[in-house]
Length: 311
Image 1 (cartoon, one colour):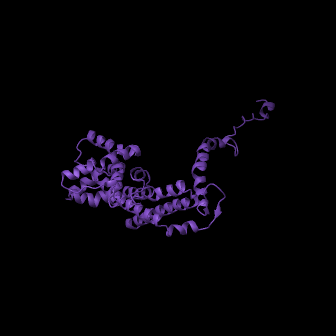
Image 2 (tube, rainbow, N blue to C red):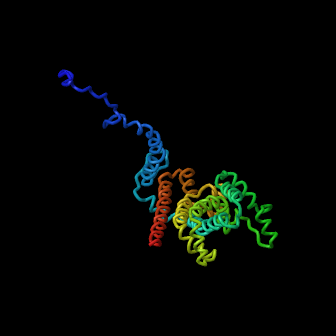
Image 3 (cartoon, rainbow, N blue to C red):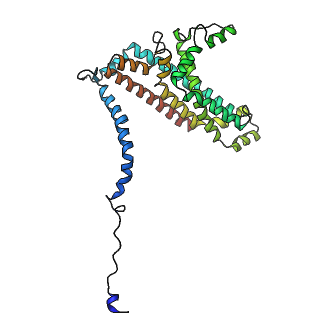
């Protein structure tokens, strides 16, 4: 081998692209994500922070804001309409947790069990129960206005046929909130049943068969096997029902607008009236944050109770 070629320097490697170097073109993925973060910041983070600041001010939106400290939050305690709205919303939330959620579980068990025998019927019922959830609230309000009509409504006709007393459902202070709860049950029963149905489908059939071999009845297997395995789904349904109950607006607003005599007034409707009719923006922001605080505290209590129950 010739000495000159042996001592020749090795060829230089080709230059690396900027991908592997710090500060190179690794920024490209973040550029693709930037629109999402910008939209998220402008339409969610900024309004949340601005509303929090506004809750400490007196503001009508037509002039300068005046700092009032915690006065808006202190005002909530002595506001009779706010307390009435809080009571109505809490009753609605209790109905969502203790009436709607158990009914949804029973519907899911019925679809999953022998009550609905074939796979085709199971799929049919899934679609039927999901339809109310995707139906426009305006359509739901128009439909139930006819059902609850005092003179020719379907519900009063059915009660009359059974010899039971009838009611002026949407104009009677004693039963108007019950009417709202019935509409909410019809609207949200299906989606909650689908949550439970998804949980039931994840329970292995071998576990239930083993319980049957051990002599457990259907009720015992449901109580001691199915329910414990459904705890995560039950917790999810209860927590989301609590959170969304304190935001209920469309159904009572379209059916009764909070009446009669504030018997169906909810926190969200009261926030709307204070903020967009009375233009008391600072107090409306305080109402909104009180709703968020109540929902978060109740959800946290439920999560802590579930953890302690699991131990």
